[in-house]
Image (cartoon, rainbow, N blue to C red; front, side):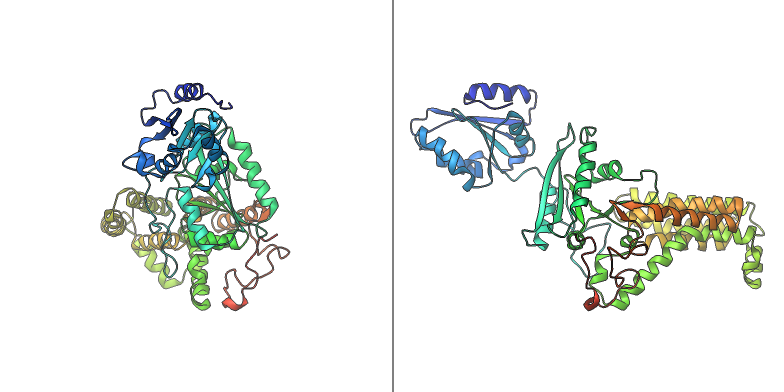
Length: 481
C-alpha cells in the first residue's frame, strides 16, 4: 500500500499493523523552525541499541532538520538524505514495516509521502568467533556468526573488489528472513545463478519459517532421497572466499552461521582450506588418508563380518585362529556383535555432541574406553570388534565434511546388512550401486564426480587427490563461465 502525505493516516495504518507488539516503540516530535511539522519514529526497542534516540545516528539526522523551514525539509529529504548515512526512502507501508522488523528506525514526516529508514546497529548478536566444526591449522581463525550482514562483510574483507556481488532477498512468509546470494561477476556461470534463483522462487511461497540454511538445502536439492550431500557447507569465511574465486556461488541465511556452496562435487568434500596453505606433499598425503578413511568408514565392519561368516580363507591362518579363539566365549553371532558395538558407539557420539562443554569430549573418549573394555571383560564381544568399530569411528572423524561423514554412517549399515545376507558379493553389489548413483548425480548441471568423469569443464587435474605445487595450479576457476 502506497503511503500518503497525511502523517495521521500513515500512522493509523502502521499502528494497526503493529498492534499488541509491545517491543516496538514510537516517539512523536515536531520539526522546523516553527515546530509545525509532525514526525514520528518507530523502532524495535533492543535493536536501536542505544541509551537515547538523540545519541544515535537517527538523532543526528533529526537534528539537521530541526531548524529548517518546512519547504527546505522536503528538499533536504528528496535530494540530500541519502548522503548523510545509510538512509533509504520507503514508499509503501509494507516496506516501512519490514524496515522496523529488520531492526532499523523508520521515520514518518507530515507532508512527505515516503517513510525514511535509517540504519541502526541492529539486533543483538554473537560476535565473530572461530569455527567449532572446521578447525584451522594455519589459515584464518575467523568463523561466520549468526548475522548475515556480518558474514557478507567477512567475505568482502577477503575479496575487496566490486566484482563480488551480494544479492539479497526476503524469504519466509512469517519470519521474513534475509537470504544473501554471493558470487564473483564473470566468474560464476549465469546458468547456475538462474537455476538457484529459479529454485528459490519455486519454494518461496511455501516457506513460513526460515531460520537456517539447512531448510533451503533440503528444499532445493535435486535428489532429495540421495544420501549424498548436494551442497557443500562451511563456517569459514576464507573457504567461502576461495570457493567464490573458483566460480562458485555462496548462499547465506540470516540467523545461521553455515554458508552453502554450490555447485559442488564429490572431490570437494575431501579438501580443506588448509590444503592450500601447506606444502603439496603434506596436502597430498592428507587427501590420500581421507579417501582411505572414507573406505574404512563404509566397509570395515561389513568386511570383518563377511570374512568370519563366509570367507575365512581371505584371513591369514594365525590371525584366523586368534579371531576364533577370541570369539569362543561370545554368546552372540557376528552380526549381533557388530550391530551391538556400532550402536554403543553411535550412542556415545550423540551423547558427546549433546552434553555441553568439555564434558562432551570426555564422554566420547572415556565412555568408549569404558564401554569397550567392560563389554570384552563381560564376554559380550570379542576384543577385535572393539578395534574394528574404533577404527571405523576414527575414520569417519577424519573426513572433513560432517555431511559426507554422516552419509557414510548410513551406507555403513547398508553394507553390513548386504554383507550379512549375500556375503562378499553383497558388499560388491553395494559398492556398484554407490558408484552408479554417484555417476548419475549432478549438482546444478555439473557432474558430481567431476573431474573424474569430464574434462571439458575442469581441465586441470593437479588439484584432485594429488595437489600439485602451487605454481602449477593454473586453472582455479573451475566453474568460470
